[in-house]
Image 1 (tube, rainbow, N blue to C red):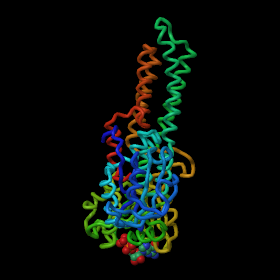
Image 2 (tube, rainbow, N blue to C red):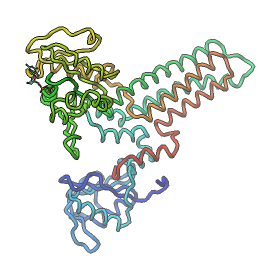
Image 3 (cartoon, helix red, strand yellow):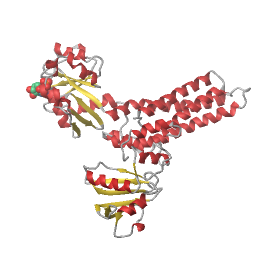
Image 4 (cartoon, protein in one colour):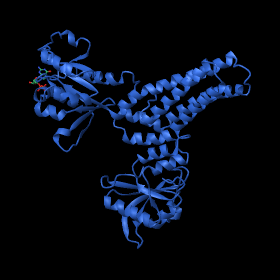
Length: 457
Ligand code: GDP
């Protein structure tokens, strides 16, 4: 990607061929002149008011109509890219989109590269790098909670946090550098304490952010849950109760064969992928048909196993075999058929979290949904609390490296080593925080981030 390239770019802002309306976005100095050449309205295009939608016709070089459309011209700098932007709201057909784009190309625009609109927003200082990543995250969010957290990133919460952390480190660095000029003098205890205090504060906050990544990853990627148990304990009934009682079934992912179909649930913001539901539905009996050993792949794939037991019958040797097959994967015991009463379970099950329910009557199902959420989000503050959650591996890596630098900084301070070392580590920590917002991010990292975007974003 050529950063200096200021060509006027055009790209589809929506997926053509599906929606009623398809939007094409144009950005750059040539946006308005281009609009004038291809868009005919009753009022002269020179009289366009910025940020107002106009009705008209898109016409080709020979004046033939390509589509009826609405167009808006947005004058810089109050635009997504901070450049002049034009949007053409055409009909959503694939052919229409192609023709209008071709027309724009013929008139001198260049097809936008993946992420180039957002890249320009970043290069022109409207958003920082973490906000650009937030754009992707908001678009890709798969659950309510994930989307709320992504929006915080988009709104610049990560940037604000990095700025606050950097300010503290700059304060510490200023104290250090004031003493570096007097190498013959030892740091006085009060200053040493002040520097140490600032570093420790930042250290603690970084640790919190790093810890939040566990939750962040769960929210971003969702979790895989496997329903396991011997025949007739009620696995299929449980599956149906889960699907039926969860109002927000995200999707039944289409696969090439029935075998690859996976059902997904949204448990109050937690995305749950139910593993091998096709297997459950086809045979109602994963264990008997394939044998416990052959379930291993599925067990390996799972983040949580719902081990179903027939509570009325009580646990038998086969249930224990299933438990053993789970290895060290997290297991939530589901003791089913509560409507028929329950028997006590043997010792082997005593250490496990358990939910008593009836898949048939639905009694206890809310407890199960809460139980699954608890396993993954026990430490997650509710979405309405304004907590910041790290969801990007890149950010997690930066915060971890920054923490390491501060760790070393504290070490040099405690051992009363030369202040040059301390200053070096603080500079390193500052630079790493700047990588998150993009101030000090190397070009190849920036390129890599934007190359993950689709064309038109
Ligand atoms: P699977 O083989 O583990 O998938 O078990 P199924 O879901 O096919 O259930 C086996 C039998 O137990 C069926 O006759 C179900 O109707 C019955 N069953 C499942 N859950 C319950 C429950 O909560 N209470 C009662 N009374 N019967 C249940």
